[in-house]
Amino acid sequence: MKGDAVTAPHPSPLPEERGASRASPLLRAEALHKRFSVTPSLLGRARGEVHAVSGVSLSIPTGTTLALVGESGCGKSTVGRLVLGLTRPTSGRVFLGDDEVTALSGERLRRLRRRMQMVFQDPGAALNPRMRIADAVAEGLLVHHPQLSRAERQARVAALLERVGLRPEAGQRRPGELSGGQRQRVVIARALAVEPELLVADEPTSALDVSVQAQVLNLLMELKAERGLTFLFISHDLRVVEHVADRVAVMYLGRLVEEAPRETLFARPRHPYTDALLSAVPDPRPGRRRARVVLDGDVPSPLSPPPGCVFHPRCPLYARLTEGERARCRGESPELRTLDDGVPSAHVACHFAERM
Amino acid sequence: MGRLGRSGQLGALGLLLLAAVAALAPVAFDPTRTQLDAVLRPPSAEHWLGTDELGRDVLARVVHGARVSLGVAALAVAVQVLLGVLVGGVSGLLGGWVDAVLSRLTEALLSVPAFLLVLGTLGLTRASSVLAVALVLGVTRWPDVARVVRAETQRAAVLPYVDASRALGVPPLRVLVIHVLPSALAPVQVAAVSGLGGAILAEAALSFLGYGPEPGTPSWGELLAQAHRHALYPGAWWLTLFPGLALFATVGCAHLVGEALRARADG
Image 1: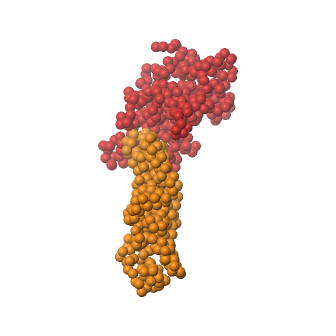
Image 2 (image 1 turned 30 degrees about the horizontal axis):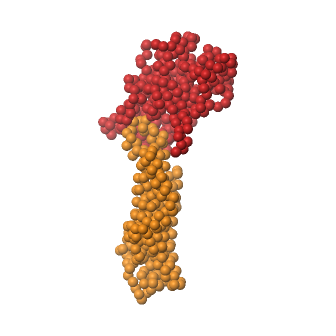
């Protein structure tokens, strides 16, 4: 073991929150990196690289929900795709149980997909407009359980539609005839059809009307409890995350800046970026106003991230540091570490998190 | 054929009617029977659309012209669509250097005016059978279709629901057949029907210039050319009006159907 008592050994898996009583994690991602090259024209050479995901490690114990939050463009959706093997990482590994997702391809990866499914942001786009609902839900069964008879398949589809709150007759309709909330229920039913263990939900409610967001969230949480599902829940909406997550990981410009149990993170954010995100969430309880932390400027271009800590140009804490301390923020990229504050399961990537 | 709208349905009806007439033509009319005692007669009860300078019935010739014009156009469009889908589909799906080569070929062909290309090919090969004219029209006109199909295939391959089916673990071939192609081919219908009108006009223009199917074949362009050559019969308006109207109506119908399909494809 290298590293001292304070620093979590970074790309190795994060320590378990509740010790040995937990089973080994269902999903484990180790030091994921993804670079996309930016090619300006057909004949031009790659002009630059976007480091969309930079050293992200995650671990989700079976039956729990990890929420991945951050602004749009921070790389959280890319992490979701890397986890599912829909995008190949530049480096790093992903494990689902004992199977290494990143080592498989073709037919073997296709078979592993039975165990991990995705719920998409825009259910209207995620369903083939020409396909009847029942056929869309049946597609996974057809592929992964070809031994089922037609009648068995139809019975399963009907049961799934009913479980997600749709009437079986809806199976004869096409996506265009359903509302957004109904379509998202179909997408959920389609994912559940193959009885996955892991569900990656990428902004599953952000394309929906506010009135149906809660219904869809509740459905997801019921299903989680009922089937022991493990969730990677990707969202920019902290109000949603507060309801569904067991642990929360915060991303900024491709990096994890904080990862902690939900209560811990919401009660006392350890990273100045998390603090700013939380302060932007309106608190409906009267008299409970959080001091608003307003960040200056925009998220820097991922084509040329700032040196050192990528957050320092916008960091409210940085402004309060001495010049010598600031030099460290500009020169050295902070690793995820635990603080000496009695919460060993909270990790933060900030040199001066103790000052928060 | 639902949801085409009124004008689209009208166009489709017109095309079907024309096709039926063309199919039945040989039963009812003989376009080569000459009646030298009745040359250049205006429309009458006996010859509804009049007769030409050899006493041939203009109605019979216009109806037989439909066979030639529609036949040539249909075959040309079939060849055009087949080649276009093949080249465009392969280009869009495979990408890389295959796409680069095929795309440059497509663009090179597109940069030459299609009609010049047709004239040149026909002039060089001295081909003049109905079949040859149709083939040359098809072979020179596929780049339009290829471009559309390439773009559509590329668009369809990254559609969220195509991605979703991959995430579901659907095998690649099934993804292609069930999800990608149906979406990519919808605009091809539009291109095909619009191409039909274009091919009919192109055939007529070729015949008019004397590069069409061999002389004596009663295509609409040939009928017009004939009337033009015999413009020394002043006042024989029926020789040009009726083939012209037939041409106009057919191209108009194809256009209406094409526009209706386009509107439907655009949602």
